[in-house]
Length: 562
Image 1 (spheres, rainbow, N blue to C red):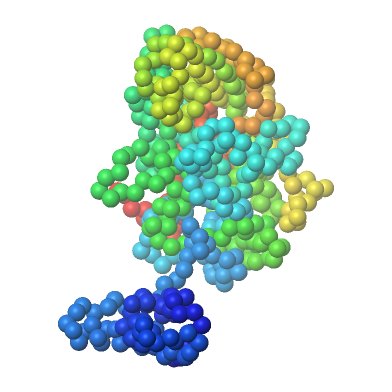
Image 2: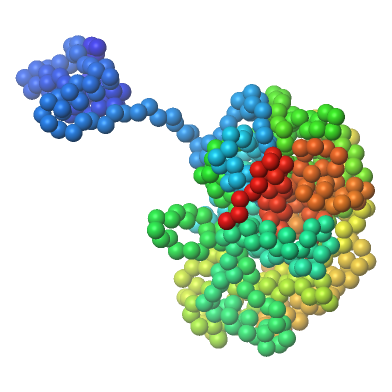
């Protein structure tokens, strides 16, 4: 081909890039380009095509006994940190499994299916109502501390419509990864006496806890060697709190070795998506709002999905897994015409009491490290208490510059049991329709007299624990030294699509399949029938993995054991 040279060196650079050659290779092919006695500006110069150039270079290299030049293979560009699929493209497929929601439940189901079906020709899809926010847990970002993390969550999340006045603290976050982007990564197991109220054998749930802890990198030694934790633990043990222990954290603290990559320390659903992607491909669409579950003659057939520009698509699927949240999963089912008696009922959370105090640091040898302690519930104390420092996760060496005879902050978080009750529920509000044509919800929630008694016992228990640990409770920044958080502010909601054997008191069977509907499952917080007094993210993930294994068995393929 001939080119018109207007600016010699700039033109060569452009042509070289276009032909995937270096300027030196171009000169090799056409020496007149660099002839010092020849001004080619404003003239036509012959240059070869990319194919001609590569063929010529390989021929010349071979003629002088050199190694051949590597061929340049065309590459498909990836314009994102995770492969995305347009909704319109997903509408052209039929999925063996389609998952709605990318939080703890949806991410767990996706990971387990991809792990077990890595060599199968199954088509798996997952959709997310929200957009991308951050590609990891917020605590993995070095620009974050606890104050900034809380402020960023408040900015990205929105108040739950229909929560007022009975559930005023509730907020929703729609994003790839869901609320796991901001959770505290506390991962205790539920106690066996609480699991005994479930329709699943305790030993079976404990087995799935083991799988969940492995995939989440749960560790009990996050604060090992931290004098802040070790000194307060000893004080508590010597004053009768024999069950006080380091708090288990979903954190990858294994040192890098043998080429292992540890990019995310704290686990979020993004970690699960990454694990799934490295097992096998799947289709992922964001900004895809599910508005209706499609079903016919007791069998699910797909999902109606709407894009932000209000274009509607039908995604066909043999199996659908709902992991949209405690509020959005039952909302979607109710709007789709399902009429199970328990649907939307048994909304459960925990009462949440916070306290703040100060402690002398005179006896704390360097390094202080973080404070992470859990005092679990007992049969006669239906609440658990967590103790953390001013920065539960962000501890930097700069803290050793604090005066060693000064004081630091200790935070207490008390989680009280709330018994599931039928009257605590969500309903659709036909008078308020959102922009996608789906009715908003109305939350009906209150604490019973028994629940209020737990709050009272928990308040006194926190005061006693603080005294035994050498902490003086004080008010700070206008906040009382001990107070009850507004209902809904603790994001431990559950139960609105609870599992069980009786269709009159549950929405799904013990494997998460909606009663009377083949191929339709629930796998998120809404499936939990009882949550006790601990953070239940680990429990949600363990149950979701169990549901995924059941789906695999339904397909005639047994989950592999390791």
